[in-house]
Picture (cartoon, rainbow, N blue to C red):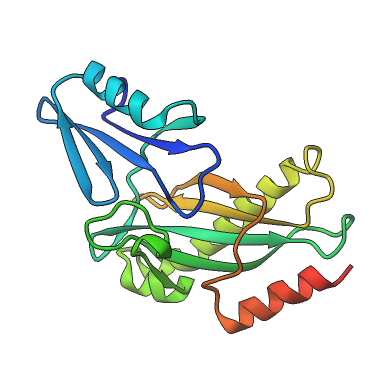
Amino acid sequence: MKYKQIVIKPNDGLQARNIYFVTEYKKKIVVQLYRKKRYFSTSDLVYEFMRKRIGKRPYIIQKRINLAKIHNRPFDVRVIIQRKTLRSPWVATAYKVRVAGAGRKVTNASKGGSVFTFKEAMQRSSFPDYMHEDLLRKLKQVSIRSAESLNSYYPKKRIYGIDIGIKEDGSLQIFEINRNPSYKGFSPRQSRRMKRFKEEK
């Protein structure tokens, strides 16, 4: 394989269903779906296995990013970006940190993950205190720029959910941009703010 670790996931997936993690390890190739692992001796065997599993459903392949961890479990950040009207500026109205469950690689709560506020997560992470504020600033900045870049494609959209990974060196990686993000898992204050943005026109 070109990369030692890749992720194969549905192009139209929801709630981290059917996401395969493929890792080359000690002359073997490990394919993990949820907690179940299968071992293969060659990439050709992996290809045949995945071809049968996927069928005609469109999937995408991404290089796997080694995320920063909390208690040895990877985490990412969901940022909600909204605008009050189609001419209003984009604003980061809510964000939450999702931590993978024990033995799992996906962070979704529906797959055993835990949800924390950004402050709670940073306190549990290995990032020093002086980095916390700068990381939050960069998360908001990247999310807003992402939404702005999509304006010409989706001019009537007023909300996005941006999933962003934080690497161990503090750099960011956008994983996914959701056009219809869930409102679940945010603090009551953030939920109220999102609702206000949704209702105002």
